Length: 151
Image 1 (cartoon, rainbow, N blue to C red):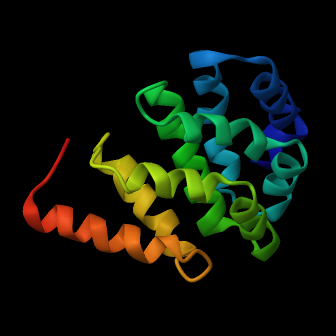
Image 2 (cartoon, rainbow, N blue to C red; image 1 turned 90 degrees about the vertical axis):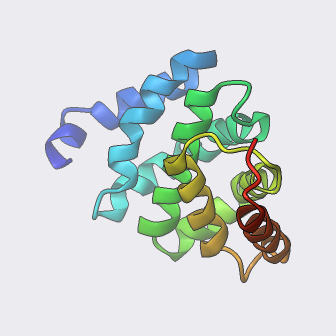
């Protein structure tokens, strides 16, 4: 990661993130996953300061039907930021609207793929104490699973 950062890879990816539209953004988001999961907070700080979350939230709000790849990758980056980030980074994720968007989609009977669904559950669980909606969503999801309901 350090060599990639020194070579300017993170800056290039962030530039792509801000200049891409539609499905093109998937490539930039896919590469940013690696920086999201890094052991060093500095890479996540650079991404947060560059407005990563403000670019991801519209894809989360639009949901899996509009751009399934971008939605899946955005969920992945948010989940990695939530689990690997420091307290300030997790707070930024919470205040960005990303978690609420994931909750809205997770409260519906949709199943994109098992990995994305699992990551949604992990994000909701990470913030369940901070968002009262989480409890109802988790209960609904458990009921749906018990009834074998899928979309």
